[in-house]
Length: 382
Image (cartoon, rainbow, N blue to C red; front, top):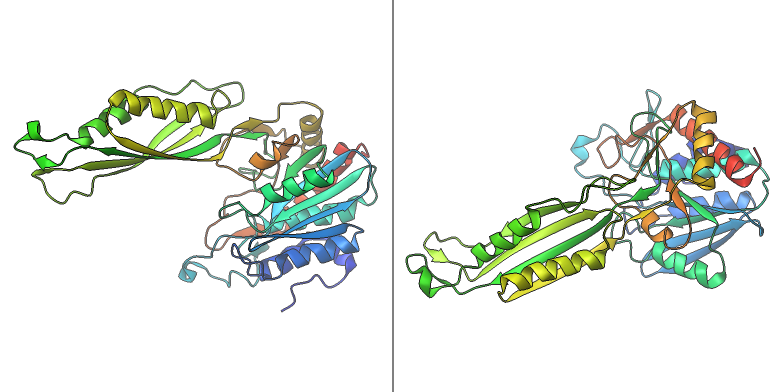
């Protein structure tokens, strides 16, 4: 079964491109030819393509044009595993069409989006300025050897765009109903508090770390971190694990552990929240360890010419007034925001990561038309 669209005429239709991508079993970090599908299509459309391999990950940067404005489309070709195949009614990598649906892993997240933007470029034809693609195979896992390293290379080469569009499936119920203009930051923390083990009947001879940890967690969760901001909902601190590992009911344990996840808005930074956690532990006064991992800072691209161009495109193509949103998890947009304004606009994502992931064929084609409209609005050609 071929992983390539059959000819250049197919490039105005995202369906054969999406099927070719789905047939590549690119379960992260594997590529299985997915980047090659994108590269082949873009070379036919006149792009200069550069393969960038970092660690085990295949990435692609492609550009057509040398002048501004420079719009970059960012996406990924890696997918999550299909999981239990018993939950699928089709082969997750066969790209079967059933009842008007394109089915397969990545149909919505986000091989369909990548295919739609390629087709949009073919539909738009020659436009003023430059269009580029930043395509990674490392978004669904650690996101270490993908977008963040390609951006570093782009900065060194003078290839940073004026604006970027990430094709994640952001629409909630209908195509174009939501544009993500930012994301909350995200951090994880692992707390370990040490005490003195002892007999539960003689607590004066022990130092109970569970009590200490409970006090710390109560202090952290007793009141909200904030009330939200103009573009963000309130920050959220969630205790995700509390572990003592004590099988006995009459033993005070020597160690207690907890894990936290904080999703935070633009009132905070990873550094300020880390300081808050350290201060809470130091107040308790027990011997402790704190391990912090910050997966992304919050960011927002406030309404301006770029966001307004996206809104005009959605209104013109769908008749809908898109909501501007910053909710949900993280995406590679968090890396791009360090370099240029970025927004996210894509398909309806109700089936992403599920068994029988699918996207309606006509919606996929509508998405490509929407992206072509975006190109026109952003590049000044419409």
